[in-house]
Length: 312
Ligand code: ADP
Ligand code: MG
Image 1 (tube, rainbow, N blue to C red):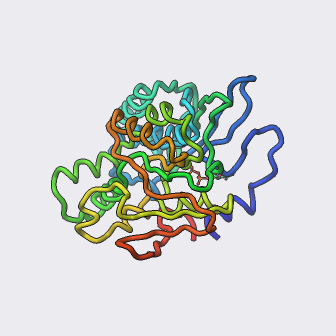
Image 2 (cartoon, protein in one colour):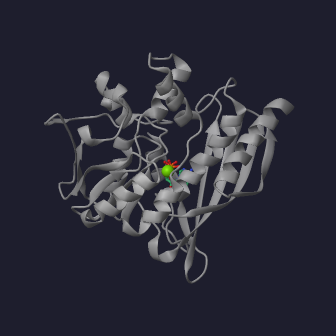
């Protein structure tokens, strides 16, 4: 049983007052006649997501950033956060750096830390985030339309390389190392780009579990398909040189946004990507084939779903 089957079997239930319950990057509940509130929680636990050696500043940053990503994926603006922290002991140096990291991320995205919980135990950091979106253009995973362009907001794969570097270290240039570690340790969800362009977007999802696996969330439930041109997916030339595009497509922790939009908006979105200094682009099309096909050098290829799975 994997984590999605677990959620489905034990926790999924019909929504009552929520606009959208379990199953998207964040839940949607009514705020007022014009706006929705968006809510999500994400936890980083010792040994699954970080180790005792992890830099506490970046852990603080990332704990909030991964939650901001879920709000951004819904087309929302993050507003408030609550922090639940479990530590084995009071280590002032560690706590000082950790708090600096989470505060720096909160400042960048204008999020206010308004509460939380503190416990002793095996280390874990859990953030609950609240965001806002006008009702008229909240983004969900399930709004793709046949013939939509499929887009990615920036180059992918860096975070997985950064993760690999933190373990065993494949050889690469210093410049690429720096970029990979930056992506892995200090993700920066592309909030301004999404807010500027959400009027053009249909479906959206963050690719925290890897592009291949997240693309399925957009297509499967809606009984749609997708055709992806692997050679057009923006990624560093390292992946091509090592003939390992699969790593970029299946590796998790890229907090970029996969979205779909009508082809007629291509120029406007491309211009906005440039303006936001993002190297994203169109990577494929939504089809009615009910399957996700990846074409690489003119041939269809199969990729494992990849991404981090807690179970199974
Ligand atoms: P994400 O990767 O975007 O943070 P997840 O893959 O963790 O989302 O979760 C998928 C969906 O299942 C989300 O809508 C999330 O809110 C929901 N979910 C996850 N765990 C639970 C749980 N234990 N109980 C209820 N809902 C859950
Ligand atoms: Mg998500």
